[in-house]
Length: 351
Image (cartoon, rainbow, N blue to C red; front, side, top):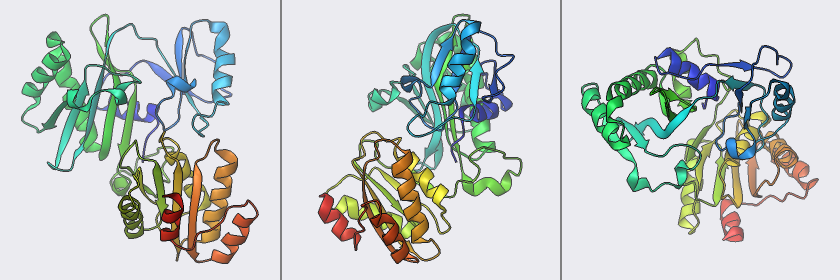
């Protein structure tokens, strides 16, 4: 489950990581927001700044008009229900900082870079600072990171950031904790300028206090290659893995693994399409569903809704078999969306 920025920052702040002063508000509650201010669209995707989802407002008279435009601005198919208003920071430098699970070493890995912000994905991967974290190495790790970032005088502050972020990661069963940018202000403070956190849905039973907006996610979405051109949607981990493997075996590059589970509704399948459209290079989305518990007509309705609601949706290659297959076929035929008989025929068609 991926959290909205304000939710991620709430977790960071509760663990002692400094965040900007700010408040969250909805469309009809614009009062008590004072300029100058940064307004941020609360959607669970990156790249908001380039698409109008982050706006600096310096005049009080402009706040209402800018905010109302942002509430109606779809970003890659997502429409915000909330905006985050934050203080404008006096920035000296920006860094990238994240914690993730290194599955090869079975450890939590710290990943950092001297250049943070929207262009981080264009950086050379070999230039990143990468270290596994243990409870015993915070002092040495902070010194090493401070030297790498060329802010040796901030080693103690960095140690606090590392320890508190690590505590947040463990306590909240995170899969990813990203601060981008980690801002060094001109008065020497380190502050989490933006934050992304993904928590493990399977750990929800340990967190009865979780009240996140995306608390109904029941599908498993994993990015395999951001440069991949083929996206996949399937139901069941086995079929999802087999679909990815078949795409790769055909000489194509799968971009993701996505298992919608056994009880997927139209709304949840539509949410899967929205996640896929956050990947920039997708040319074809393969939908490979074997309907047992999952109803093929529900998936068909989600496909139709996706075509209506998501601009520039990539080409769809659809195989729906099993429960309510004939109803699904009739629904899709009304929108000139053919069904393939098998995954093999799909791969032959798009290869």
